[in-house]
Length: 469
Image (tube, rainbow, N blue to C red; front, side, top):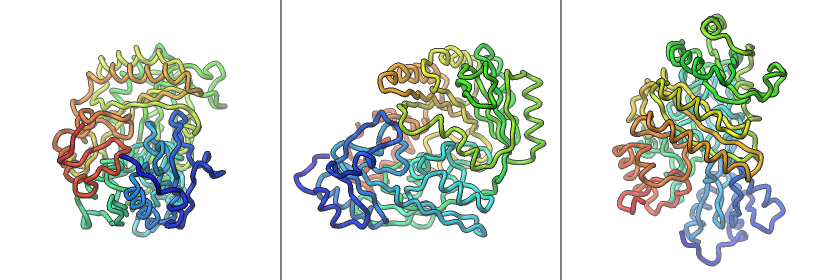
């Protein structure tokens, strides 16, 4: 988007109730920081919006002055789409309100709320929204791409529990999207990312969960990877839906519950969470131990909110990140061989591979019910995540993520990629992520609500009738 002269910080301040930060302001450098330190960008201005009206005014202002827009919720975009050089950042962090109606089992979350905010408010009533696994993630970005985590087998994706949303579209209008109001827009934002506007409030359906869950981490050494993955292949899909298992290739943390000889040791882990009866969880652990005794284990009940914070430190702000994902319908022998060949090539002890099991409530939703970029048949979503402490060491880990992804891609379905773990991609890859029919439907809805592609800092879907690459 070509920028025009004028439209400075003072002009935007004049029409907003929230603060606006420019490069000369003392709070600018703090306000421009994002989770992934690799994305060091310098916006022309950062509008910390205090209301949906502020968001609408900023969208109109940016359009009038030819300024590119980035939308910042939790600032967790791995590829840096929540910030921009020389444009306007719509910072939603002040829109972090949470209201809970425990009788109706509904919650409303501001577009800048974090998962930790949502967890704390809903768990006060023994309720939860199925969401991600890092509490400082933004509700907005996670939800718009799908939203998966510990509770997905039991409760589905975040978008499967979205009842309505307040959204500012490219024309600066504030709309409510639901099954009965702008249903086309409601379909699109459930998986279509930030392509269709700025969501300033989400309304979610709640599930009973917690306040205590059963948790176990079981760890095996690197050379036991093939055996452990074959065990997971047989065991995980057969477990009750009250039990969630995340499979990991990682380095053991230097935590008090880890025997000292295994501190930082590379290996494989099963993270087993029970949301139901403690006995059912214990039975599942016994089956694992009998089939393949782990090198060590840690088993404990814990509050649901602590489960949601369990890997916060491993995903801390200020590190350097790069990630990709691949859907896999089965952990075939060929997939297992590719994994065990790739995992030892990591050079950072913070880099990991995670496999989320997606079935149960995930698979109960028809594929065409939402714009989600993946089929609903039972599957795994494999995440390859590079994390380093310096920018200089990120290049090698980025190459490893790409190599690992390339090794697994031949075993993936022909269409479908989780857009929350895609980097900036060409349109051929975006179309492959959604599949031709969904992609075309999304383009038509984009044409209706954002014909000039104002919201393009995302896994972009161009409007119908425009150039597609």
